[in-house]
Image (cartoon, rainbow, N blue to C red; front, side):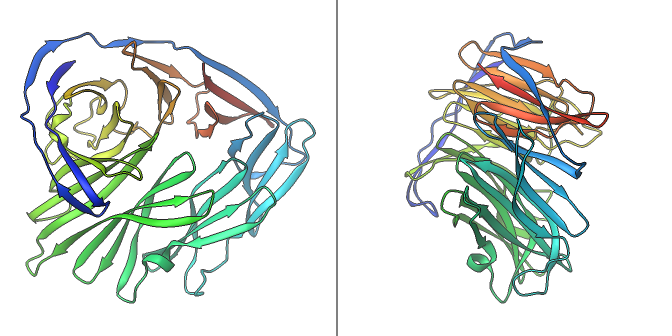
Length: 401
């Protein structure tokens, strides 16, 4: 583990869209190294409960479980609809909360239902992010269903859409507490406009936070900035900005990591090259980033030929930075999510999960209690997933002490 002085640009913003001042400190490297502490087991509580279903459900998915574990939220499909419901774990009684017609069209009637981008439950509020498509363009609806089954819809296209602007790519969405953080892309003539936006689950409010524009000149060269991927823990939000200077394609460009404290003037900027990986990567880009004020968790994009441990945990200690790899994070096994519970950090993909204890500088890796790929759902102090044995379902819980 290499400790180095952090070259950081601190920015005071009048608003989140305007950078008002910058200060730099010189980057220095301390060649002292410490041993990576990787252990095979961690202090977690693993348990399970049976899910009693009165009938078989097609395309069954576990969405969430209530804090007291008395109620489970699921989604499934019938011939015409995607159905969200809650089930009493003891009695098996089901209450339908929300239905989406698989043949439905968007508000304008020109776009057809495409897929669910994200769903979950926050304090008994079910949220569902629905995508509609037509000829390669997309509209996205954010829907909240409260505990009284009141449905509130917020179409992000109402805030973002213009006659010449096309929502050209499915957004990247992560959740932190009561907020969904979103990176999205629009084409506007010969420019690509990208945004960092937020959606508050509690009040169904959508808001654009940051904006970047990348222009395409007559020779096909790219110039400008592009926002790609984001993550959040506590009050801190990270997002990646790629800067282009006469680049031949979007695979080029120099990547920077932006970090800000939500609803404050604090904004910091880091070059991606500060965060050491095991092998040099040309035109480095991140496929995952998230963290708080002390820890940043990242996953570099690597090809099959470059396959190596490309996940990193980086710890900030004043103006010092230390980074170390996360084992088994490589091509085909990328980080899917990271959450903080109390003073520990939970990192996972579909095959295994890790717990990082910053105080003890310990990283532990753990396998799921199944050989199948796992889709995790967030609960109060951990995660859960659905396991099927023959015709019976079990909900597996992974909770941190």
